[in-house]
Image (tube, rainbow, N blue to C red; front, side):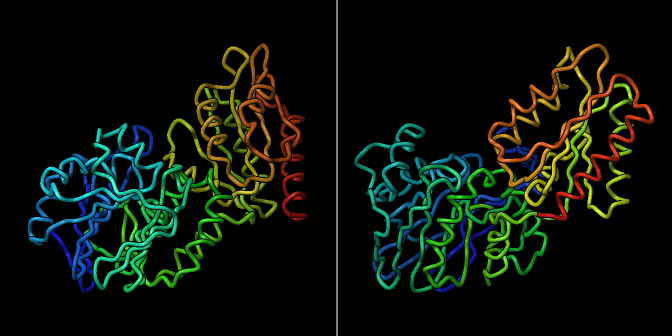
Length: 390
């Protein structure tokens, strides 16, 4: 994507990565991603807000050369390499520029990219730099989603360059969110995969930036928001303690027994008016699964045993759930075994970060009998009761 003027003196100079399929060797990217970089031209100085992933550095450089502007400041909101990785190249091309960032980000950039000490201008929370008719304010927003993260506010244009805050993994030729309504689903996926563990700090940082008059939010990934009310209200909902009447059931079945249990539970919950989302861990989209956890009240983990423990797919997903700390209220564990099981004990040990109430587990030897299916119906009754009382 070529350089595009957003407003007078404000340009988009980033890159769309249509082909990238995975992030951090972990997160699928069904819509690719973008690396958003912005150039702000004042009367006296020009600032580049973040750079791009090193693989797209040539595109950033081409866009900057198109504009034929000098660069005085390179603002680094966050040291992760998809934002900062092209800084060394930009410093080579614009040797008079200095990197403006906070102390934590500075130390990370020195470690990651070997940027020398004399190339930094270190700022504090709330500090400002005037470009001449354009004023940048730096607001520290730690743990959204790294300890070094900050955002940059352009006062005169009421624009917030929000780094990963409000981001979405989406490559698109449409620069603004109102041109592509899919962005809100992509933003929820992004929140689920990266931001969910940091709900308390996001609440604090959302309150902090809300003190500014914001007309436009320009994140480092995905489309730009203008107006901004919808994405801010969605974040307020996602970080709240409120949950929906939703039961999420991740499951694995090796020989069919656990699948019979899951199918029966799904039918039983639907008959009771609950919303249910089952996910076969061997075939699911991980992002869709994590998105469902943003709102769910209840998680039911269903697994067969492998050497008396939960199936490895169950283990890896339980580990991820524990890291992401969704705002679940209730968890139940059920499964089948052949000759012995420690599944309940092991899974509860893996989910130590969750502040939930555990419902009675169901452990079945072999195929479920009629008595076993009645136990599953009783679990459905208990889940309904819990949801109605919440």
